Image (cartoon, rainbow, N blue to C red; front, side, top):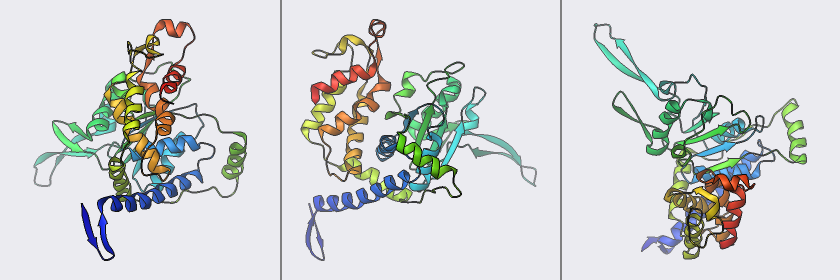
Length: 336
């Protein structure tokens, strides 16, 4: 298919290339803008941006004080999104997230219900310590994450577009928490492990955050530009070798998979949603790097964050000291 322009004939492929180059420049500017505030977490920033470019949600796992909250606030400003935060606690109710209906009386004496939206009606929602809320409250967020709308008193209310949830989880204090069920974990495109910064990053952080002036993030994209980038991600071509690598990796991470070096270690593994997540994520990573198509290297780089929360080892494997990360490393060796 071709399109006539003032300079001649332009193919659809040419239009996609131009759009990809322009969008990639915007996305790289966004990554640089986040990097001026978040130090020493380049991989975390990259994976968080990949999640949002893929149109999905991410689970941030790390000890307190590693700038997880600051990352979400910064990304809201840089990407031009309306960002809100919910602190999950054991007494949090579903209505505290979704909103509720209140009975109002007009001056004429007529009574009617009015819906007051909750904090879920944001473009970027931070669910802080999501595993501290009860399963009932956790599941209230599940519908919004998967279906992009909520139902209150039988009435459907659509969440804004784009809509992304970045949830945090503290791996240390597990007393009094409610572990996320597998069905909800599967809704997160990837689990992002937030580790300690290196020495130079922490040194830079000390001077920047304790001085008279602190670095402030600056907008680099708008919500409309982000939506356009998400559409472009879905249009990027994927080579047959990359598709085969994704299928091989995901299918070999299931119990009983033939010729899989880790099949005997796995109690339950990823379903087709993992393949979909990996397909989108490798495209988003390619765009973030300014490439027009993903490679097998992208599959290898994103295998662990996409798969690790969708797998569990058998009791025998855990007793022998095996880990999910080691099992995924064995699987990556098959496609690397």
